[in-house]
Length: 143
Image (cartoon, rainbow, N blue to C red):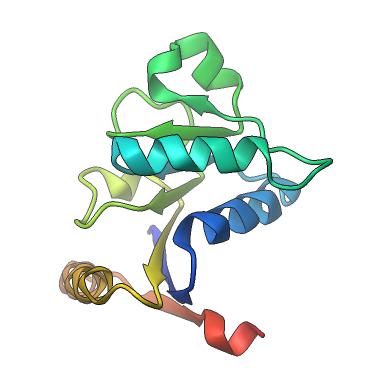
């Protein structure tokens, strides 16, 4: 069964996704980041410049199958025709259709956006109603 984890209190969701992606890649996982086009465009820029001497190689879903298959991180607007299903990072406001194909789903929740927090509570309820146990990570406690 898919493992669902909520990472709460991210002061900057996209910066957190970059750090999370770096850590996941170090552990051999491949990621799909699901989001809307503006967020994915900003995230792509951040991934290419994680630090002055570091970047996280990735592809956009529209880059075509060969590029997507070779990339450890795929930025996608839909969960269709994706080559790997290790970790899904959901940046959308709804429960992604087809999330069950992934071994792990990570929901990143803002510490400052009340609407984002509200939508996250709705997704939490939806996952729970479908019988999924949820792991909670409060990023304020990670200090």
